[in-house]
Image (cartoon, rainbow, N blue to C red; front, side):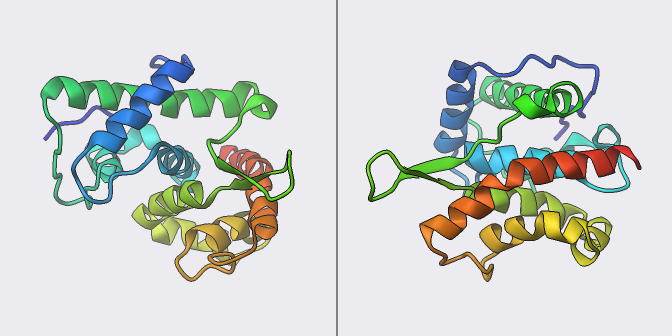
Length: 203
């Protein structure tokens, strides 16, 4: 099945809240096991953009798009009710991907990842939980594990990636951590991603 490639010159309009909700609903309605939610998708796209040593525009869409709805990179389950539904989801994904790249390049401090927030026991206290985001990011890492290995093994990038491994790995240090610890790790991710983007831009 043919899928479009990421084109850096394509539509970079950020998705509206309504369009993000539409994308979230499209993902939730897919019948395939392993389909991402909107948080995991956001993390996955960030990981794709940050993969060392390559430009995502050089990677065929068939190599990374099907993973979003549960494909394994070799077999595409194509769990769509219609070609129209598939096209809508793909176009929303591509726009969201491009808007992340443009935000990092032009207005980095305004960029916000899509995390879950839960109310704490104390009134007015909310805890961020980036577990799904981190899981999605690590799925992008798995697509190019050899390229990512030096980033996880060497300081200072290993320190920047540590919260993702702690939150997103099945055996991560924060898999069963306290809400406070998970919140602290989650809130450190945006600055870590911007630092990684700066390193990525240096080649």
